[in-house]
Every structure is written in C-alpha cells, then in structure tokens.
Image 1 (tube, helix red, strand yellow):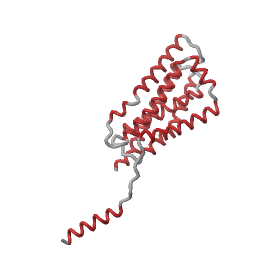
Image 2 (cartoon, rainbow, N blue to C red):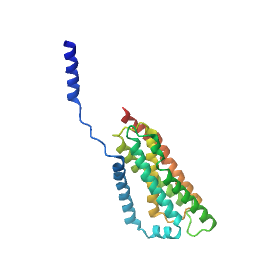
Image 3 (cartoon, rainbow, N blue to C red):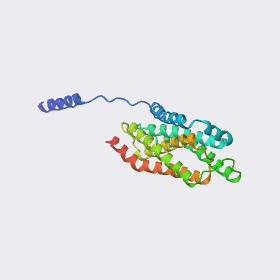
Image 4 (cartoon, rainbow, N blue to C red):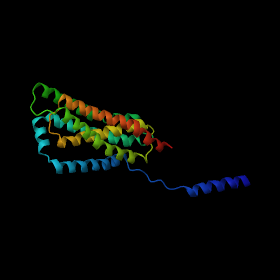
Length: 219
C-alpha cells in the first residue's frame, strides 16, 4: 500500500514539473516565413542594382529566365521538404519534392550554355567573374542555411542528414535565384561550372554540419 502511494506521489511530482509544449506551425507556414527573408534579400538587391539588366537578359535569352524560375521552384520545394522531414512520421520520399524544379534549373542552364557556345548573344563571364558568382552563392547561402537550421532545431527530424541536404539545396537555389538580379552575363561553361560547384559546396557542408546540428532534436 505504501509502495502504491509512493508511485502515485512520484507520478504526481513528475506531472507537476511538465511544461506545455508549443505546437510547431505546419511546414508550409514555416516555409513561407523563410521565403519572406529571401524576398527581403531580393528587395535589397533590387534597390541597389535595379531590374533593368535582369529583364534585359531574360528578354534576350529566355533560357536564363527559365533557369531562374527553376532555381526558385527548387528553393521553395527543398525548404518545404526540409520542414516536412522535420515532422516525425513523414516519409523520406518528401526529399523528391525539389526534383522537378531542379531538372528545370539544370536543364535550362545547360541549354542556355550550349546555345551561347554555338551562337553567343551576350557577354560571357570570365574566370574571375565566374568566381565572384561562386562567392555570392556561398555567402548568401550561409545566413539562409543558418536560419533553416535554427527553425528546424525545435522539430524532430528523424533523418537529420537528409534534412540538412534539403536545407543546403534550398539555400543554394535561393542564392542562385538572387544572383539573377545582379548577374549581367550569359550562362557559359565556366559560369555554369562555378554555379554547380557553389551548390555542391553548400549542400555538402550542410550535410556535414547541418546533420550534426540537427541531432540534438532527437534527444
């Protein structure tokens, strides 16, 4: 009898110490909040550079506009997938969500690169200028990745590395889309290679570091 009362007292004591857990917003809401930060960055770049060069490039080479659209779709879908993977019970197939946008992004970029190699219509970036693109994408990806990791720390991603890959892809794609505002060159082989290298670096670093940072959510 005394043991039963002791157990009840222990349960009551533990129950009194429990703190209410605030429910996280749905993945699409958190994706929208992250996109507001991306839009704020875009607004700042547009205020500084204007939209004239971007519109001129898109008019002269629609492939560039399609590649930019693909980057935007990839960023939105990858961020959504990251937040969805942070919900326990969500299947790993959410990681396929960015694939259509990624195919459009890569395909349009490759087509534009091939067309400009055959019949160039706009100035092509040299190695130094292409290197600036790499620095731009990595630099803008750092705060965007950090924000996604911070937003996901309160979640419980059962696949932290896969979630971190989605974080890296979303951040790199968003940064590549932002680059369109101030990128005044046609997509050449060197430029495309630098873009791909920048995206790969961001994704790999996020997979290595982001996966570890998301691990405490499992405890």
